[in-house]
Each structure stands twice: as structure tokens, then as C-alpha cells.
Image (cartoon, rainbow, N blue to C red):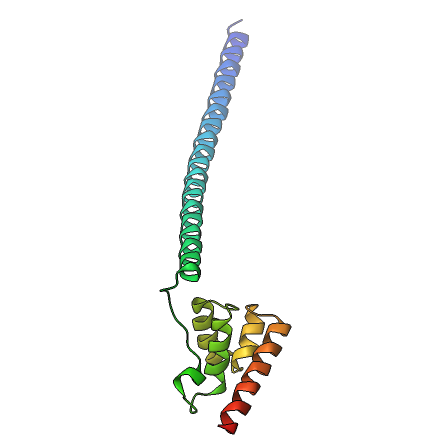
Length: 155
């Protein structure tokens, strides 16, 4: 009778030991998953905050652009004919034409000028590649530039 009792006690002890191991494994997994959830939540919160900041920055830039367009005392862009400059290259003439007619912004103009060196393309091709202007606008810019060139030769 003692042997079956000993076997029963051992079986109960093994069962309790296995339950404890399973419970500890479950707790460690829950802790790991909880930590991962906190990391992901903090990343999400950061991204939401960053998105709000970017939206605010976009709104501020849109307002500044609108003020510049509406403000008579804003940035004045003059053409090469206004300055009587004949030494200005075609890139600068086309750039000024697009800026005068509000086809591109100052920021886009600066980006296109920087990309010209990298892409080894002319100003209009870079503007087309970056999506700042469409083909019709580029044709108008070329046409206006050619008209200005002809008129400067007649003077």
C-alpha cells in the first residue's frame, strides 16, 4: 500500500511541477509580448506626433506661400529684359519665366538647379522629371524664351 501511495505522490509532484513550468513559460511570454506592445505603442505615438508636426508645417508653408502670392510687397521677380542683361544663360531666363508666371515655387526652382548638376540635364528637363511642370508649360517657357531672345537680338 505504501508503493501506490508513493507513486501517487510522485505523480502529483510531477504534475504540479509541470503546471508550474507551463505557468512560468506563459508569464514570460506575456511579459515579452507586453514589452513588444509598449515598444510598438511608443513608436505609434511618435509617428502620430510627427505627423501632426508635419501637417502643421505644411499648413504654415501654405499660408506663407499664399501671403507671398497675395502680398504686393513680396518677392519681386524681374526678367533679364528688365535688367537689360544679355549675358544671362537660357537656364536662368527659363527659371525666371517659370517663377514670374507662378509655374514653380522658389523652393522647386532651387531643387531643380541643384538636381541639374546631378542628373546632367537642362533646367526644363529636370523640372519635367521632378513633376514641377508639364509638357505644355515647358513648351510655353521655351517659346517665351525664344521670343525674348529674338527681341533682344533686334535691339
